[in-house]
Length: 238
Image (cartoon, helix red, strand yellow):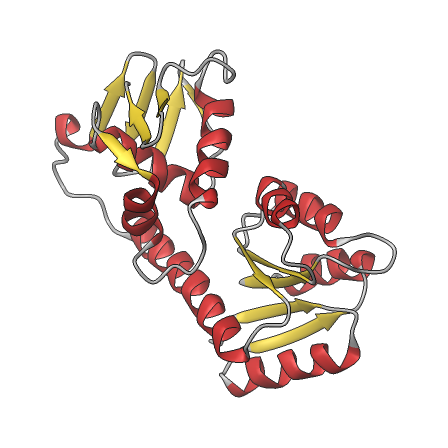
């Protein structure tokens, strides 16, 4: 079955171009030209990925992203008309998985779409794998006091409660836990967690670390589990 992509873009010629190229690449596509219609279409269409423009009539892309992220973990690729740092940072903070600045080449957009969908499929395959007949708890569980990472179930609990983590948040936390006590540079983390072919920058790591701290740290403003190494990156203390 073809993967489904929802294009949210109010500029007719760009919307048509995106739909044409995605359809030609074998995806099932639908489009929306404003924020409210985007939310309605996403709920009905259940896309595997959303290409979401920031500048939309009525409800902008940031607000659309917030609403959709509360309901789904579908990958969201945001489009911004300005090469503006604040747009990229805010886009990631409201839940986008990647961003692309206009004007962009269709080849680059298609590469990012493919990369996000491939990552989602790898996570889905991992989740559907049958567990070993006799799992070794010592191997499959990473425990750090009240924080427990179950690698077989891809599940994290804190004080016995299951945490709601996005796939990339889980992957990042597990990577940290498997390298406890080591200083990990942002570039190394980006390559190992997001993949060598990821086109984004290291700010993506910072945003995801901030999300994780909000979920696993007693005081996110004074983190004790994931600490920042000045001029270097991060270190997981457990």
